[in-house]
Image (cartoon, rainbow, N blue to C red; front, side, top):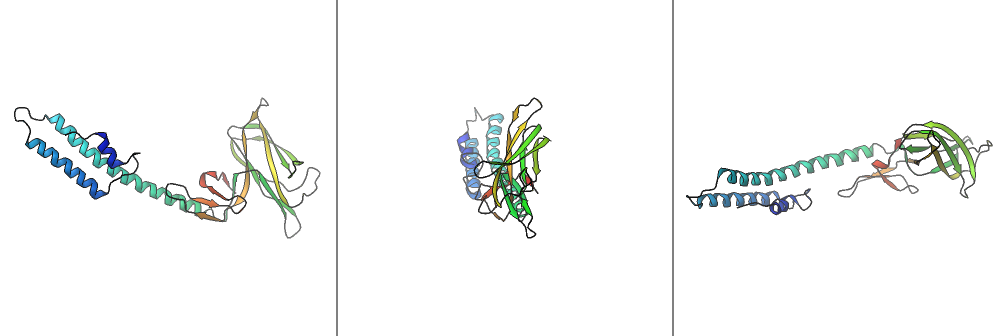
Length: 231
Protein backbone atom coordinates (compact mmCIF):
# COMPACT_ATOMS: atom_id res chain seq x y z
CA UNK A 1 0.00 0.00 0.00
CA UNK A 2 1.52 3.29 -1.10
CA UNK A 3 0.08 6.73 -0.44
CA UNK A 4 0.83 8.85 -3.48
CA UNK A 5 0.84 12.64 -3.85
CA UNK A 6 -2.73 12.70 -5.18
CA UNK A 7 -3.98 11.50 -1.80
CA UNK A 8 -2.04 14.17 0.03
CA UNK A 9 -3.30 16.79 -2.42
CA UNK A 10 -6.88 15.68 -1.82
CA UNK A 11 -6.46 16.55 1.84
CA UNK A 12 -4.29 19.60 1.44
CA UNK A 13 -6.25 21.17 -1.43
CA UNK A 14 -5.46 21.72 -5.07
CA UNK A 15 -3.13 24.65 -4.49
CA UNK A 16 -1.62 23.42 -1.22
CA UNK A 17 -3.15 26.23 0.78
CA UNK A 18 -6.61 25.15 1.93
CA UNK A 19 -7.77 21.67 3.04
CA UNK A 20 -10.68 20.24 1.03
CA UNK A 21 -11.77 17.81 3.76
CA UNK A 22 -13.22 18.39 7.19
CA UNK A 23 -11.29 17.29 10.27
CA UNK A 24 -13.54 14.23 10.69
CA UNK A 25 -13.11 13.26 7.03
CA UNK A 26 -9.33 13.57 7.30
CA UNK A 27 -9.34 11.45 10.46
CA UNK A 28 -11.44 8.79 8.74
CA UNK A 29 -8.99 8.72 5.84
CA UNK A 30 -6.01 8.31 8.17
CA UNK A 31 -7.84 5.54 10.05
CA UNK A 32 -8.45 3.80 6.73
CA UNK A 33 -4.78 4.08 5.84
CA UNK A 34 -3.79 2.58 9.18
CA UNK A 35 -6.33 -0.25 8.79
CA UNK A 36 -4.95 -1.09 5.35
CA UNK A 37 -1.41 -1.06 6.67
CA UNK A 38 -2.30 -3.39 9.55
CA UNK A 39 -4.16 -5.69 7.15
CA UNK A 40 -1.13 -5.73 4.89
CA UNK A 41 1.10 -6.68 7.81
CA UNK A 42 -1.27 -9.41 8.94
CA UNK A 43 -1.47 -10.94 5.47
CA UNK A 44 2.10 -10.54 4.35
CA UNK A 45 4.10 -13.51 3.13
CA UNK A 46 6.02 -14.88 6.15
CA UNK A 47 8.79 -15.90 3.77
CA UNK A 48 8.98 -12.42 2.30
CA UNK A 49 7.86 -9.95 4.98
CA UNK A 50 7.72 -6.20 4.50
CA UNK A 51 11.06 -4.72 5.44
CA UNK A 52 11.36 -2.01 8.09
CA UNK A 53 12.25 0.72 5.63
CA UNK A 54 9.10 0.15 3.58
CA UNK A 55 6.87 0.16 6.66
CA UNK A 56 8.60 3.27 7.99
CA UNK A 57 8.10 4.98 4.64
CA UNK A 58 4.35 4.28 4.64
CA UNK A 59 3.96 5.43 8.23
CA UNK A 60 5.86 8.59 7.30
CA UNK A 61 3.37 9.23 4.48
CA UNK A 62 0.48 8.93 6.92
CA UNK A 63 2.20 11.37 9.29
CA UNK A 64 2.84 13.72 6.36
CA UNK A 65 -0.89 13.87 5.63
CA UNK A 66 -1.61 14.66 9.29
CA UNK A 67 1.22 17.19 9.46
CA UNK A 68 0.06 19.05 6.35
CA UNK A 69 -3.43 19.33 7.78
CA UNK A 70 -2.10 20.73 11.06
CA UNK A 71 0.17 23.13 9.17
CA UNK A 72 -2.81 24.40 7.16
CA UNK A 73 -4.75 24.98 10.37
CA UNK A 74 -1.81 26.96 11.76
CA UNK A 75 -1.43 29.01 8.57
CA UNK A 76 -5.16 29.73 8.51
CA UNK A 77 -4.92 31.01 12.08
CA UNK A 78 -1.94 33.22 11.23
CA UNK A 79 -3.77 34.58 8.16
CA UNK A 80 -6.80 35.47 10.27
CA UNK A 81 -4.58 37.26 12.79
CA UNK A 82 -2.87 39.19 10.00
CA UNK A 83 -6.24 40.18 8.52
CA UNK A 84 -7.39 41.40 11.94
CA UNK A 85 -4.14 43.36 12.34
CA UNK A 86 -4.57 45.04 8.95
CA UNK A 87 -8.15 45.96 9.80
CA UNK A 88 -7.04 47.48 13.12
CA UNK A 89 -4.23 49.37 11.40
CA UNK A 90 -6.63 50.68 8.77
CA UNK A 91 -9.15 51.80 11.40
CA UNK A 92 -6.41 53.84 13.05
CA UNK A 93 -6.10 55.94 9.88
CA UNK A 94 -9.67 57.26 9.96
CA UNK A 95 -9.65 61.09 9.90
CA UNK A 96 -5.92 61.05 9.10
CA UNK A 97 -4.37 62.87 6.14
CA UNK A 98 -2.35 60.69 3.79
CA UNK A 99 -0.46 60.78 0.51
CA UNK A 100 -1.60 58.36 -2.18
CA UNK A 101 -0.70 57.95 -5.88
CA UNK A 102 -2.12 60.87 -7.88
CA UNK A 103 -1.20 64.39 -8.97
CA UNK A 104 -4.14 66.51 -7.79
CA UNK A 105 -3.70 69.66 -5.70
CA UNK A 106 -6.79 71.32 -4.23
CA UNK A 107 -6.82 75.06 -3.67
CA UNK A 108 -9.32 76.77 -1.38
CA UNK A 109 -9.85 79.88 0.74
CA UNK A 110 -10.18 79.70 4.53
CA UNK A 111 -12.47 81.77 6.78
CA UNK A 112 -9.84 84.50 7.00
CA UNK A 113 -9.78 84.81 3.22
CA UNK A 114 -6.33 83.26 2.94
CA UNK A 115 -5.66 80.98 -0.02
CA UNK A 116 -4.32 77.52 0.81
CA UNK A 117 -3.40 74.39 -1.12
CA UNK A 118 -3.28 70.74 -0.09
CA UNK A 119 0.18 69.13 0.23
CA UNK A 120 1.61 66.94 -2.48
CA UNK A 121 4.53 64.52 -2.68
CA UNK A 122 6.93 62.56 -4.83
CA UNK A 123 8.12 58.96 -4.70
CA UNK A 124 11.56 58.14 -6.07
CA UNK A 125 13.27 54.76 -6.49
CA UNK A 126 16.70 56.41 -6.39
CA UNK A 127 17.97 59.79 -5.10
CA UNK A 128 17.69 62.79 -7.40
CA UNK A 129 20.18 65.62 -7.71
CA UNK A 130 17.45 68.01 -8.85
CA UNK A 131 13.66 67.87 -8.73
CA UNK A 132 11.43 70.48 -10.32
CA UNK A 133 7.73 70.69 -9.42
CA UNK A 134 5.27 72.25 -11.85
CA UNK A 135 1.64 73.11 -11.10
CA UNK A 136 -0.70 73.46 -14.06
CA UNK A 137 -4.33 74.44 -14.56
CA UNK A 138 -7.10 72.47 -16.26
CA UNK A 139 -6.08 73.66 -19.71
CA UNK A 140 -2.42 72.82 -19.08
CA UNK A 141 -1.19 76.37 -18.46
CA UNK A 142 1.79 76.56 -16.09
CA UNK A 143 0.91 78.45 -12.92
CA UNK A 144 3.80 77.66 -10.63
CA UNK A 145 7.27 76.16 -10.95
CA UNK A 146 9.69 75.44 -8.14
CA UNK A 147 13.14 73.87 -7.97
CA UNK A 148 13.14 71.55 -4.97
CA UNK A 149 16.85 70.71 -5.13
CA UNK A 150 18.21 67.25 -4.17
CA UNK A 151 15.61 64.74 -2.99
CA UNK A 152 16.37 61.40 -1.34
CA UNK A 153 14.98 58.09 -2.56
CA UNK A 154 11.61 57.21 -1.04
CA UNK A 155 8.73 59.56 -0.32
CA UNK A 156 8.99 63.30 0.27
CA UNK A 157 6.12 65.74 0.81
CA UNK A 158 5.93 69.42 -0.10
CA UNK A 159 3.56 72.34 0.29
CA UNK A 160 2.42 75.14 -1.98
CA UNK A 161 0.65 78.33 -0.97
CA UNK A 162 -1.74 78.44 -3.93
CA UNK A 163 0.13 81.36 -5.49
CA UNK A 164 1.58 81.73 -8.99
CA UNK A 165 5.25 82.57 -9.54
CA UNK A 166 4.02 86.18 -9.89
CA UNK A 167 2.60 85.94 -6.35
CA UNK A 168 -1.01 86.01 -7.50
CA UNK A 169 -3.51 83.74 -5.76
CA UNK A 170 -5.07 81.16 -8.08
CA UNK A 171 -8.85 80.59 -7.95
CA UNK A 172 -10.19 77.80 -5.76
CA UNK A 173 -10.28 74.50 -7.60
CA UNK A 174 -8.31 71.40 -8.47
CA UNK A 175 -4.92 71.67 -10.15
CA UNK A 176 -2.24 69.20 -11.28
CA UNK A 177 1.32 68.82 -10.08
CA UNK A 178 4.06 67.10 -12.07
CA UNK A 179 7.72 66.45 -11.36
CA UNK A 180 10.93 66.31 -13.34
CA UNK A 181 13.67 64.46 -11.46
CA UNK A 182 17.24 64.13 -12.72
CA UNK A 183 20.45 62.60 -11.39
CA UNK A 184 23.91 64.17 -11.18
CA UNK A 185 24.47 63.48 -14.88
CA UNK A 186 21.25 65.22 -15.85
CA UNK A 187 19.53 61.95 -16.73
CA UNK A 188 15.78 61.76 -16.19
CA UNK A 189 14.69 59.55 -13.28
CA UNK A 190 11.39 57.77 -12.83
CA UNK A 191 9.18 59.50 -10.29
CA UNK A 192 5.59 59.16 -9.11
CA UNK A 193 3.43 62.06 -7.98
CA UNK A 194 1.42 61.76 -4.78
CA UNK A 195 -1.61 63.75 -3.72
CA UNK A 196 -3.30 64.55 -0.44
CA UNK A 197 -6.40 62.70 0.73
CA UNK A 198 -8.37 62.30 3.95
CA UNK A 199 -9.36 58.85 5.20
CA UNK A 200 -13.11 58.83 5.85
CA UNK A 201 -13.69 55.19 6.72
CA UNK A 202 -12.65 51.56 6.36
CA UNK A 203 -14.34 48.81 4.36
CA UNK A 204 -13.57 45.18 5.27
CA UNK A 205 -12.05 43.31 2.37
CA UNK A 206 -13.72 40.31 0.80
CA UNK A 207 -12.30 36.90 1.67
CA UNK A 208 -8.72 36.77 0.48
CA UNK A 209 -8.45 40.52 -0.15
CA UNK A 210 -7.14 43.47 1.84
CA UNK A 211 -9.24 45.97 3.76
CA UNK A 212 -9.89 49.15 1.84
CA UNK A 213 -9.73 52.77 2.95
CA UNK A 214 -12.46 55.17 1.85
CA UNK A 215 -10.95 58.46 0.64
CA UNK A 216 -14.22 60.03 -0.44
CA UNK A 217 -15.96 60.48 -3.77
CA UNK A 218 -12.96 62.01 -5.56
CA UNK A 219 -10.34 59.36 -4.77
CA UNK A 220 -12.53 56.36 -4.01
CA UNK A 221 -11.03 53.42 -2.12
CA UNK A 222 -7.40 52.32 -1.76
CA UNK A 223 -5.57 49.51 -0.01
CA UNK A 224 -3.08 49.98 2.82
CA UNK A 225 -0.08 49.49 0.54
CA UNK A 226 -1.20 52.52 -1.50
CA UNK A 227 -0.76 54.79 1.52
CA UNK A 228 2.69 56.24 0.91
CA UNK A 229 2.87 58.69 3.81
CA UNK A 230 0.76 59.74 6.79
CA UNK A 231 0.79 63.50 7.24
